[in-house]
Image (cartoon, rainbow, N blue to C red; front, side, top):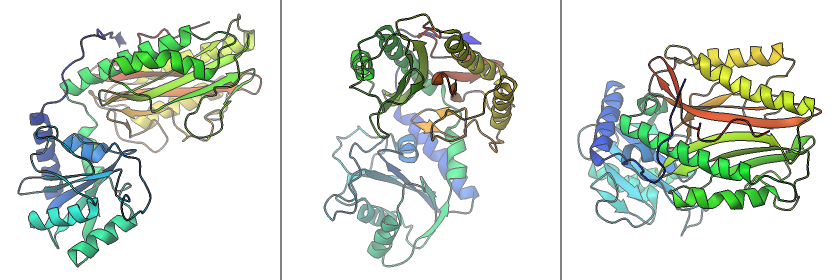
Length: 400
């Protein structure tokens, strides 16, 4: 298990336009082999991957319902013909050269823009793939069809496009290393500030400048504290409490994640605040670290995501834990891919795809007992030809 620690003041270059052109060509080949004439990639601020990976764009707007004036804010789309140049539809202004597509059009309504782009590309009435299918709402499809004057012939292709970006390019891997180093320094700063009298919100505020200074922004910080440790904030965002002061002897968990220069960081740490942990607290804290280290050690090319998950459930049962019992309301998984966002496949039952060298992954656990409550531990790493390279090691594992 290798460990890396890039210099935070020297960020690596981001992918060049040539890399996006190569991605578009691979996507063309995939949809053409599926008997399709082109592709519509649909993205939102919350789930941008299809457009972001192919065209380097993510909307900065929140989704604003079905307003006639603002209903398409928060969405973007790429029309990619098998033969011909792509057209990118944006909900905001862009300067020449800012996007990885030469024909980038700012439109009032994404749906009307998609219809016009399909016409310009000669794709009206053609068989089309849809990537980012979960983002395109039924009303989007209806509005595109109304603008075209006829039905769309759409075919889901997430299963074709998603595997194309599962293995990251060398440039992306350097971006992932940097993002995780920044994220680890962010987490280190928050954990160093954990002391009685401060709130979870105080810790987030103390850590935030580290993230902002290096081109990052938090998607959220999921926190829990107390004795037993539990969420102190109402469900929603933010997921931390800014009112309750931490007390000596509290267990504290922090899970921070968000983009740094466009690529995600994700890690979690836990501790006992201002006191030596009790034996039950120490046991669960140590077990969480042991669990993550055990699963990462099992990751190598050829092993399935499901096999890593099954190892995790067996580990928990052997030690008397109920699998997923303290993953409060989340999916029954032990991790995921990470890149432009949280990505699949997950470390979960039924995920039978073999792991490949070049994937970037996060393995995580919320572990606990009724006495201790649930604490967190998470690491991110890159899969190498013979194992893994941990990229969150800048932040120590143990804080007790």
